[in-house]
Image (cartoon, rainbow over all chains, first blue to last red; front, side, top):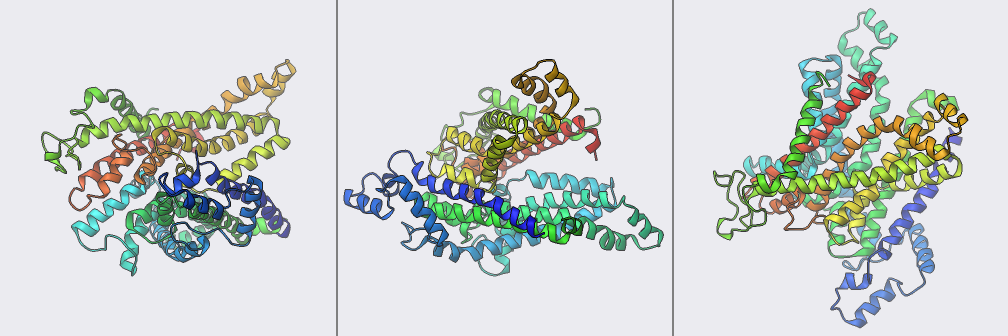
Length: 307
Length: 269
């Protein structure tokens, strides 16, 4: 277990270095003068020079790179041009909103997909099974930048049940969570179904059935607990995809999180903030994937004890 | 193919997409960029079956022309991604050792960016345009194919027919191209079919965020972005382009599922 853990973390170092390098290069890949792009070409020469000095763009590139890495390690992501505040402080300020939305999406996805997957597996090839699998294929194919506006049209504009946008109580969370969580629900219900179908062919399920246990108990207590492993993995892996998906969902619903911040930063050409947001989301994704892997090892005794 | 109804539906949808894209000038009732400011935001009518947008342009004509944009982005991006991914995957899997290690670590770095984050980051520094979207999505897209091809190559190269080819004097290049590549194409084709759906959605997503195709080019994503401003008064501007995207992606997913079943009857559910 310990050796696995150390190996897994060591393997992450080049990945994280690669991500940091890519994010560092963003500002240097801009065609032409990045300062021109940030301030506009008609800006005063003195202002441009001041920004160039502040961003350290006059130094040789290796010094800039060293300074960037040193900053990232210390949690110093630079100063936002637009907000005139430390980038990391702005991101941390917006992170709880994104986290709330992401967790909302996961809850919605689990609430829809697990029961759907269980019933579909228990009644394989039934009408419910076929229609729920068709539904999940539609869910996977439905882009969230269409689903979101559709939900707004139906539930906010036509029916007037839920708010159009913004953040507030639970009612504000429902539509964005459904928008963000639908594709995950679709993937998860297919996963639950196929994972259960594999498990219920095992001998211990036949044994449970022979004991005369009810089908419900067999499904939930015996089959689901054993089918849970791939389901948990998918939830973990999808978490990162949700972080990226939140960029679009937050834009649709004016949700004050990191996703919307990223787009605002791009629109206002606030490159230190763009770099910070991209780096933060990517690092979150890497960490969540690591935790998923470790959880996987932790809950499966076959992997835990084999070392 | 027999009895594989979803695959047939998928094939029909994609054939229709290709036909629509190629015959757009014939099929479209109006010029997609012709404005009519006296008839802004009109709901569907007999003259304009899907209504008119904020500049009085015909929505149906714009959706028909948008099919071309989606098809173009999808096929070129998947094509470029396949060329890069297959080459690197073959090299990594066949040569192995340090070459494999380096290529796989590069893949890991690309995979550390979830979803379309990498494309968004790239588009933040490039002029938003159709060509740049294709570049950004290709930079992001090759990784999946490379990993798939590498995995297949690793197992294929242990086969006896490879040993046989080698003992007959075939060079490495020939073995990779003539003996390994044809045997791994099936899963790659399946993956590429799903991948094309992903690319079409990603292009529309970037355009929706204002980072992709720019107006007046009739991209479905751009249409959704414009429609978003008029959700209250003209919901049809959002409904129809989105429906087009969903039908095409659904078609590709059906087709991908179907092709997988044909190549691999074991996985049939």
